[in-house]
Image 1 (cartoon, helix red, strand yellow):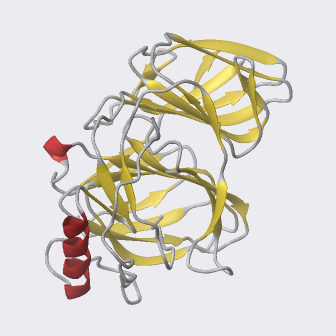
Image 2: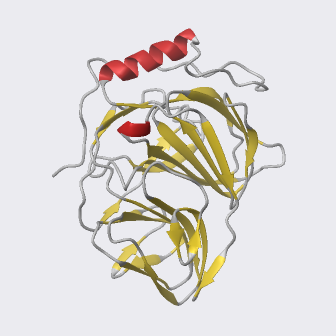
Length: 313
């Protein structure tokens, strides 16, 4: 899903390992007050990254038809994960695919890509997460790519786990990434407690979709994202009524990025150049074939130069 805010904020992000904190979601209307609303937990003032994860929108269940016209991306990978619904995807890499519950679609927009997203006629309720991964300096100009994976559920105690990126609970995703990462959907049964072995070099985020969950002694409410810093080799989750969560992780990113609209770059001038190229229709982003409609124009840049905003010390 595109970041189709009419006045997107500029964000220069840094990554610093930290302790445990609860990140509150903020409601963001996409495309205006009557459009689909999402709950955004990344980025925000106190935390810009969890590993290379730099953007987290949580939406639904919502009786809403999605129709996002072709729009551009640079310097990132998009991760689409649905709980309910179906979305048709087309991109300038020539991919025509569908986003379905429990199936990963990972699109790489390094040097530049554009894509469209339209809910299918049979899809009446949308519910899921849209995530972005920042590409490191060594691969931020990577060529267009698209990977699809349908992870098999694995049982671990009173939990069912689907690992779409990385490794957890003895399950490993075959999807390749540019930095060490973890992404998994976990369903906890009522009155359950489970301890996962995790990489101590990772920082982790626990996004609660439905139900209740505790990370150790820290309780989350639906929509909150619990952040856990590096240095832990186990992660204990418990639930009284049952829960569905999305677990994110990765090694601290360690780079600064400037993120504005659908672009990730390193400087104001890069972002401005990306915007100019999209408006001019250059080959950097290519074309989406098969979408019935015009592409999405870029919003105007904010006044002044895009300035640093990172994690507070």
